[in-house]
Picture 1: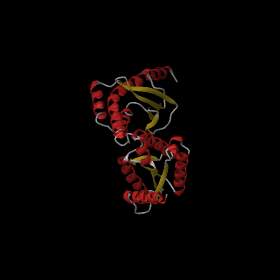
Picture 2 (picture 1 turned 120 degrees about the horizontal axis):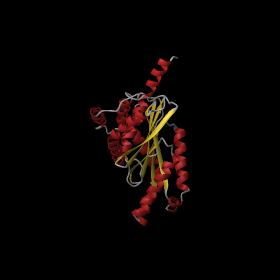
Picture 3 (picture 1 turned 90 degrees about the vertical axis):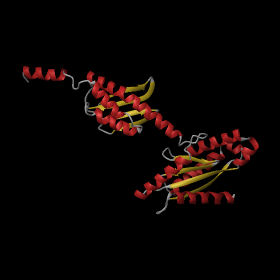
Picture 4 (picture 1 turned 120 degrees about the vertical axis):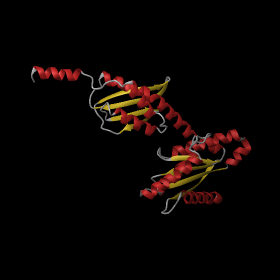
Length: 284
């Protein structure tokens, strides 16, 4: 390589790979980010815009101890992590995987992007939080009846498209009315919260638990089989039997379940599980 080539190479290396965003570009980017309350959609827009300036393989957003892959690209050697805040409110961290080490101008551009992202991201996070609260039972923290109806419809739709198992399990607490009548609703609430914790402990992390109302609970298992049902129901009964609070109140659980059949809908699945549970309850 001769001197002129070395000089050109050095100049290219020392020149910035990008130029800062102008005021009009920043305004346009902000307009594209604003209005998206779905976090996934917001980050899709963000990633598309950022890729115009920086070669990025993968982007990961970590928030509330959960890692979310924003862009599923190649995992490169170079990684850099940035904290995101809005009015001093932490919004997690963004990690970028790139095929080269980011230079000063690219890092400066990322800071600009982060400032423009922070407001819309804060709105999306708050919207998601409020939306999730509307789908949770206030006493136990389990998903509520509205969430159950939505999720069961979705689970049935998945079964119609894919050959995977679906089982709906229902639990009804025996002797719960006696607790309320004898000790009052505060003790009854403690029993409900404890039972809900045991149900959650008995299932896989991917399975969802619900309080349908009163002392009635449900679990949606997918993928699932009758083996899955036996494991969960046995585990719940064992946990309840060995729990000091519940056993002191003579609490046990009646169980019913239904397995998805071709042609089922969410209502037929629920009715079979409900009937199965009350047959067991009447047999006690």
